[in-house]
Length: 254
Image (tube, rainbow, N blue to C red; front, side, top):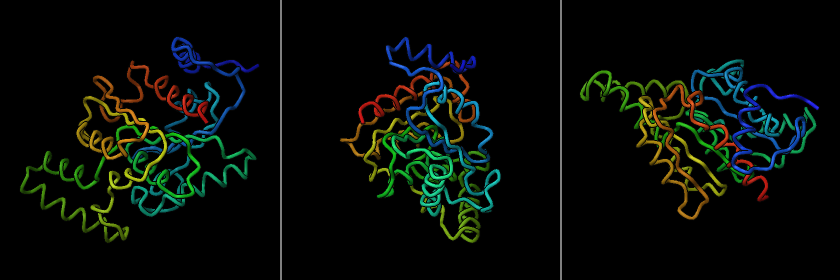
């Protein structure tokens, strides 16, 4: 029998306190696709995967376009790449010989926007999703950041330039990166998480995304106290156990 790391022991202990039933070490109960944030790469999420592996998930962490070893130079936050991500997941199941089902998805920030678009695909096999520190509209985030740095007048002008350059490089306008619009099509249970002190993507943007998911969807909104954008996964809040509980609940429901 395999032994668990300290991170693995911690998440298992927290789940046992919640009266969750856990599988023995080394047993795999499903697959978790993890999608990283902007400027990140797969290696940054190994410690994240470590925790979910301890619960029984096989973790797949691709480098998204414009990041890590991915050969595509630019990202459109999933607008063009969602089918590519799903194809990557399917190719991994073929290469490493594992069943696609059951499977879950976790996306942070930019990865959250990707996750929503992947889940919205008609052929998506995912059964539940967690979206961390993401946004309703990228345009709102860009406008807010430029205005905060440069003031409203100059910020508005710079935002326009950003939109022009982004469209020139990618063929997609910033205004087209509307995660909230895609959220309307989601049919799987979704947990939306945001840091209380996020200065990069305001809590209001994350909450608007949450409210964009269908009202009859099994969904939940969670604000992590004192967490910012870049440290939300490393605070003392038992976030990993909360996410794992969500995945296990709907894995078992299936």
